[in-house]
Image 1 (cartoon, rainbow, N blue to C red):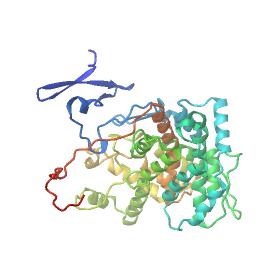
Image 2 (image 1 turned 90 degrees about the vertical axis):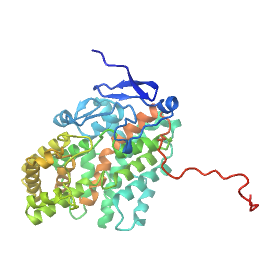
Image 3 (image 1 turned 30 degrees about the horizontal axis):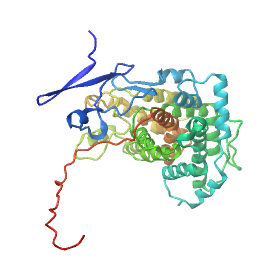
Image 4 (image 1 turned 180 degrees about the vertical axis):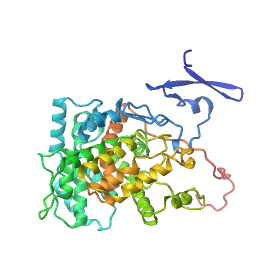
Length: 433
């Protein structure tokens, strides 16, 4: 039996045919783009929970089956094959994994563009010591449009590779500079003999009095963490990038807006909340007591790192990160008491009907904070790491949206305020014009 090509909407005595769009993975959508023109009606969908805002070929997520694919390649295969974050960045932006020559050329672009404009270093001196690193990063990215202004639509085809490479590489340098500034330590410049992730770790932790030893395990782990966060379809920050970009805003200002969207606790700050939760449970030493608080509607306690807006089963990224946790700590012969708390908490939650019935399974944030901490990344930098990882995805969506000649995003609303009051022409006797 063939699938219908149209849906029928009945409004009173009127019937309207609405086209049905089918995606490559079988997802179906009803095209409502002409609904208001033909009927006078709009749809009401708070937070766009059931609305597809675009067609995209970048990332596929199936929440019911726990599937995540970048450009058609399952995330598990990418990790198993040992693909690097730089290769994933190329895959997302260009649509295919780079061959040898493409990979070499892209890596060279990243190296050439790894330095931040030297004048921008002075900006770091003007921020208060307690400034949130995400706010600093958003401001610095926006400032790039002043130093590298040739990123408008007229030069898109010529400059997108350079602009994307500059962002992916320079943001890494900015993040490391900001961290060094917060410690009052000398800034460490990038080196062209190091890989992307090795360079970042070296800029973060090298010191004149304590030279940093670059570990292969650390570099591999950072690659995995960045890959798992590189894109995730139409989330809040990606939708922000597409919305801002639809006004033909330059790439740097658009990405700055995405970083601002990511800075909120409901989007990019979840793994920090997980770490706080694990510490509280460790201090109390009673998981059951914590669960009782979570189940109490009048108690503000929440089970952080579990559940997801899209996934109704295990987040595939969570499975990978848990395995990486076990592997990394065994390889380095180190222990973390919070990891044991996390293992026990997950085991208890997955045998509790309260959480199972609500599809509360571990998500990507549950173990990622533990691994970042093992790498030496401070918790205040966790969201910055998320932004660093998500850059290729944002750039890919911006490029796809621009290439599709998207009209400026302009949602409708259902007005529920006071009725419009039109004054009579003769009602104003004051003589005031």
